[in-house]
Length: 261
Length: 377
Image 1: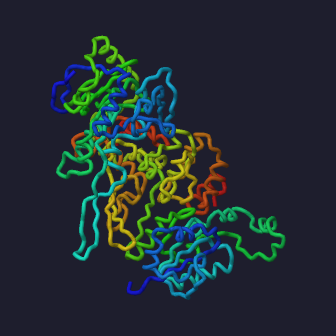
Image 2: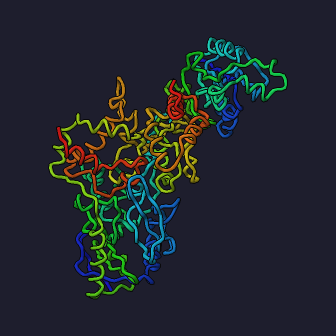
């Protein structure tokens, strides 16, 4: 690229944690700023430049009619559109509303629900516009974000492995918490990227990177029930994983809940 | 006493005795000799391999109970130091490290300059290596150093290592070394081999290097009573083995049943999570990636453990070759037990049982083979 690539960071329904990962790249930030022109990043700078952008990082899910329109304009303005995090990639924890009556939630939470104009669902960006790359995690891993940016600068595909968390546990030397301690763990069906943090602290993976490639959820559910996990707990674990609306997790929680759709 | 020099892997006939009260001196001797001593210790409710500096680091008085998909650390009735079987780790991770830089390059005004990444690891003294693990090391030697292509990282670590084996005195329900002719008795591939008695260890010397370590320690010649006690302790392990794998014509059996319905059945249970291959002491697959810094001026080539259970491990121009769990499980089992023989002249399985214990859904390869054998195509 002859000019400095122009980067934009956009937020939808989310907690801001993923875009903060960009700011958290403290050691690499100056070198990154030399190679990238940060044209739009409200979290970090009030300087706002209009599109088009070479790379758009999109955080958050689509939960309002306005956002459903705004993402279309962002898509038109952006050469590469990269979603960052579980909200943008799978709908986030707010996708729990997809299994509930959102109008009832509004009545319960807001004194004047008539002022709220939100959609009945929380959906990932890819349900609305084509996405060039999805970076997983709640929140994303800042080193993986750097890999995405470096690879786009270098004109190659990002290397973000699609395998299970188990592989990374074993590379680290972490002992399987399910086999040795009977702790339920979503690691065998969850996408790596975090570096297998939770099992190294003797707790099960809770699936915050969403499903790995070709997960065998039915078999894991069967085994979890053998070690005493109830169906209700399994349904809740999958839906509360921040990736509950990801197709594989959704299908399994619906199957377990007896709500095949 | 001064031991007589012997060629490596040619056991000295005389068995010695090392008192437990002198074992700390033995450990000190190893550390002072420049070795990093790695052996069994407790972490995360399991007996793993890690650094051993003091005898207190050993899992004295603990044992393991293993079955399909389950491992439990429990107290023993006695204070045995090596009264357990094999854990989730194996010597593999020391000779074939899970993640390692293999080379690096820097962009200079004269073009790319390549350089070695020095391996800083001191020589290992691997303590507590079991017979099946000795067999696994011999299997990996065929992969990494005995064929045309030599892996320099493996070779350096392997050749400098001292191996202090320990004979099993018990077996788990997952053990089947007797089927694979790999144990439980340590017969070769060690520098020293211990058998635990209540207050001492009998010591067989397998190499000059092993003899040298003992030269300044107060070892004595083992009395006939100690030899008999050690033999009885080792026999306990043999007697406790219940699992078996019928290896008769196993290569032809598996390779002539590639479309057997059992592969579909096991694929409904298999998570393709990679655990079996990761704990296997002989699985040797890795992938290599180039990692560059932000400027692109420094590039490092990194190797990490990979596995045939990974979806994109078989990626080639045009797509994924093994795009179903069925084909990935079949690839692993038929390689391990059948085509490994064509490739390396031995089975890839040493009967340690790790893949059975550490499979989260308790798939047992001996049962899979038995199911095919019972009803072949």
